[in-house]
Image (cartoon, rainbow, N blue to C red):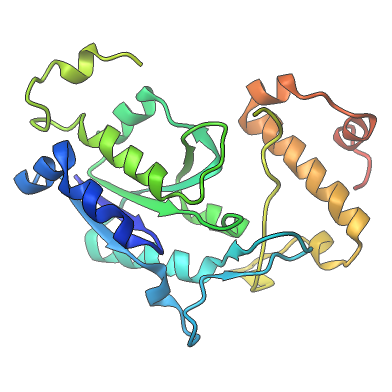
Length: 240
């Protein structure tokens, strides 16, 4: 199996990939891991991979251009792959997912940072995964977990072939979509509301997006939400 990791901190992976089961799998050639820094695909002197969010707000958002360019390069060089974004809004990683991914010959793991990805990045990945209902500083630890869990399912990696077969296995809405420069990326524009400068309209739009995303992606979380009168009005079609 080949695993590509797109990360601005490739140095974080050296000790993990050199040790224990992963180190042995790499030495045997069962697993190959390539690390790609999206800063290599920037054009400004500061090698910026992030920018301020449209509509205002705390933190920075990862720009789509260098991330997509990095993904496209590794796919062009080493063939089609299952492309996965590691982020808090992804589906929870389960053992069933691990078993499924272990059957893929080529994976691309995209590591988020800061306030997350520009939402348009989602048009260039196949799925999103999260370690659970909590927030990490970045997607690198999630990528390490995926690599470790998947590698253990590869033939010959564990000494006992039966080992993986015998093993066991803050609530609230998900975050709204984030966008940053450019205002249009490959034909997909930033939602007009975020460019309006109307902070109340932006707040209501973001709340609606968060509610709809939660209802669609995590109905278990949505069922536990205490909806306000405004929430119900937004979900009933009131204009944000």
